[in-house]
Each structure stands twice: as structure tokens, then as C-alpha cells.
Image (cartoon, rainbow, N blue to C red; front, top):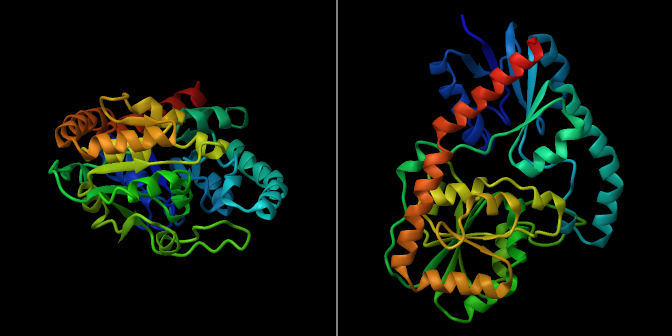
Length: 348
């Protein structure tokens, strides 16, 4: 009959980027390898393995433990560290106070799993002392998304594209001086592909939402709602992808490379912050650029903006790398190997 696998949806099947880039590929990709895989149904029993996102439904654990022989926890953010830079001084003190409880909470979840899958090597290192075993599996580059590709026309203005969860807008504030310098050159516009909801944080710092961010900008901005039906096409219509983060926080330092890899898979040249996951997938000057200072951000962006031939050479090299190493097929194979490793280790 094959191994029966249940996958707990992050917000309900098909309702989140986590499902789209991680769990949908498993639901559709594992059965051809002989697994019986589907989204978890609490009315069913006899699961061999249940995969559960550890940021979702922790109260399910007692039920899951009754339904499955083994549990694999999936966590692609470092929830043992916190992005204190998102908050004002009072908020930072509150987060320090809360973090004691929250670290204990997530450590307990990690320990309840028979194995943990992380999104980056940095996260795996963070979880290692609190988990029975850890593997690293980055997000998949979906077959459907790989059908889109950038074009390398020389147009005015040059389209800089940023994309991600609205909470990640704080990363753009780390290159605010860069955006202002580019705005003064009157050759660029910034396209923002993100969600529309407002993140209200009474002890937070702006931007709380994309519209507030746009009102603070000197550079011309355009907003595109993050919709599964249009987001990839909006990204591919850009000229240069920007992936900045505030590198000072451990939370950001351990981020996975998912956004960089998606941009690369679309053939976009990428300029990104210097964090380990981004450095591990970008071959400096060949498949993208790691920028370590405001001057380097401006230099790399301007260089690419004025040289469509270089954008094409770099973008195509990035696309070959991303699709060759992080395709949906490769993702399923990596996850399948983790499942087999867990079963063989526990049964031995």
C-alpha cells in the first residue's frame, strides 16, 4: 500500500505561500514515488508520517501523535530568534521579555517532533540542540512558475522589483538611502509585489503596510497585490530584483534563500544583502550580486540598469542554476530522502 503521509496545511490547502512552495509540491509529487500523500485529515487514522508546519496549529500535536507513527516538523523561519529591529525601543524591551516564553514554546514544539526540516543551514544550526534531527530543504521552484521568464529590453524607467510578505518591508528600510540616491537619477521605479493587509504594531516602527511605505518614498513606486495567479508574471516583468534584509538581527541572518532563488529562476539579475543563505546561492558577478554597502547597492543596480546585455547573461546563468538545483522535482526528491532517513533511523 505504500507509506501514508499526511501534510498539515499552513492555513488551509492552497491558501498560503507556504502551501504553494512547500506542501502542494509534496501532495502532488510524492505519490508517483510510491507514497500515499495528501493533506492531513483529522478524521482519518493510520498515517505513517505527518508533516506539520511548526508555526501553525500547535494544539494539533496531541491529535497528530495519535494519528501517526512519526512527526516531521517543518519550520522555515528561525523562531528561536526575533527581529527586534522591527520595533521601537519600548517594543524591543517587550519582545525581550516575551522571547523567554516564546523560545521555550518553540523548543518544546521542536522536541515533540521526530525530525525537523529547516529552510536554511543557519536555521538548522539554531534548531540542532533542541531537535532530535535536522535536515535542510529550501522552497521549491514550481514548474508553473518556471514557465515565466524575464525579458531584457532596454527601457525607461528601469523596473526594480521587490516582493515578499508585507512584514518584510522593513528590509527595504535598510537601503533607504540607496533608494533615495536612485530616485535622484530619475531613471528608476520600484515595483512592490506584496500583500495588502495592514500589520498593526502599536509598538512597531513603520512601515506597517505597503501604502505607508510608498508615501515615504522619493523614488516612483507601483504596487502589485500578491496573488497566486499574477505574482510570478509581475516579478518576471521586472528588470532587476532587490532582496535586502536588515542583517543585524539573528532572525534575518538565518533567513532562507527562497526569494533570491525564485527571482533567479525567472531569469532576473538579483542584488541582495550579504547573509549566508543568499551568499550560498549567488555566484558574485556571474548569477547576481551581493551588496555589502550603500555604494555597492547603487553601483550594481546602475551597472545592470544601463547594460541589458549583462542583465541577460547574468539572468540566464541564474535561471539555469536555480532550475537545475531547486526545481519542484528536486524539492520532492530531497524531502523524500528526509522521510526515508527518518523512518530508517527510528526503525533501526
